[in-house]
Image (cartoon, rainbow, N blue to C red; front, side, top):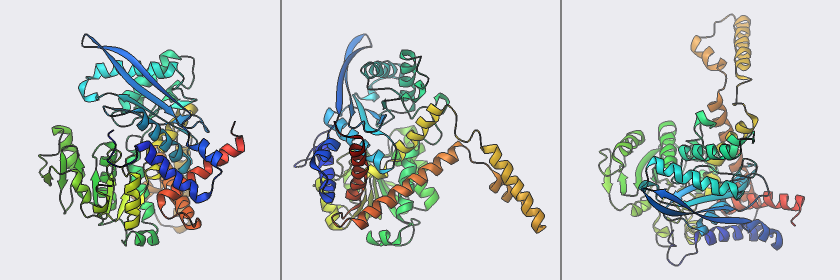
Amino acid sequence: MTNPKNEPTFRESVDLMVDRAIAAIDLDPGTAHAIKSCESVIQVKFPVKIRGKIEVFTGWRATHSSHRLPSKGGIRYAPYVDQDEVEALAALMTYKCAIVDVPYGGSKGALLIDPNLYDRDELERITRRFAVELIRKGFLSPATNVPAPDVGTGQREMAWIADTYKHLHPEDLNHIACVTGKPVHHGGIRGRVEATGRGIQFALQEFFRHPEDVKTAKMSGTLDGKTCVVQGFGNVGYHATKFLSEEDGVKITAVIERDGALINDKGINIEELYQHLTKRRGIKEFSGAKFTDKGLATLEKECDILIPAALESQITLQNADRIQAKLIIEAANGPITFGADQILNKKGVIIIPDAYANAGGVTVSYFEWIRNISHIRFGRMQRRNDELRAHQMANLLEEITGHKVSASLRDKVTRGADELDLVRSGLDDTMRLAYQEIRTTLADEPKVHDLRTAAFVTAIRKISRTYIDVGVY
């Protein structure tokens, strides 16, 4: 992606933010250098015959850290990716996994391609060929390096990759765990598709459980009635705004997409917009809001919460001073540049950083991987036993009190948790505990003054303990 004017590259921006955290805790320079270094990166070029002609595709896979295995991170398909971006994203994955206590190293992959230019069969051939390159070179396996969906990829691509690995390694009992984000009927887990958006919701809910934090963001009360602008209406932006508007009473006043933005101060119906976008492949003719072609400028609209859920480097030195949101939660990776981050901090804008906020995806990917290597779905062995015990408790309560428990209440208290319930519970717990740990770091460290630095300090301390305990050779 083109670098914003007068600003560091995406990778340099990530390193600068990490350097700020390292300086705050006086980490040994050697250990710091080891943590920051990208362990390995591979570039592959491979030919595929498309419509009678040979096309050569370029792809990358970077492993930033293998201090814990497997290394984890998505694969994106986009016409703008390069090695610098892949390495930056891999580094973010390392810190992200440490922040939410998911025992993975960080990795990332990308293919330089515009997926909109190819049909389904062509994308399948390209994806399987890319997977073969990564598998044969040791950059894809359930034990060492596990991809997931990212920009431009989804369940379909993950199913193709998993099937390719299975055919190359049929002897691997855990072959289905070589990728996550698969369709449920091909080894996936319920709740993975919406996991990142659901994680954004849980992160905001936890933030609003701390009145002193809300006051710092110049707000009060709960999420109910708060105004929100979202940039990017893909998988993450859609699910985050859907859950926030339908379950928490947040008013979505603007949605920014590639072709412009929609504005409605009374609130946009997210599900209606999603159905429109699915049919029309654009937001311009949506009747439930006013359209403007000034999409990027709409980031500057006054609101309580801003959710950048598109791409990196969207809030830069050029527009940071005009941002009017009180709270920004980074659903995308790296949407705020290092320079913009400094400006926003000086303005008093609270930023819930990407390395924590969008960790819902990797958290539920971890649950899926555990499900795959354990070869049993969550809840299968204990659900009916839990229901039986709950019925027995209800019967006991009726016997002791002499009053009948209503059928509706009995159904609620005796229903055993299914896989989706357990996934959501695990994700909610993860996001809550991680935020509490970050805010404790912020309170305890005199040189740490913002949530992003606190999040990186939290991650770096965990990673450094691994390096010190195991040894750096």
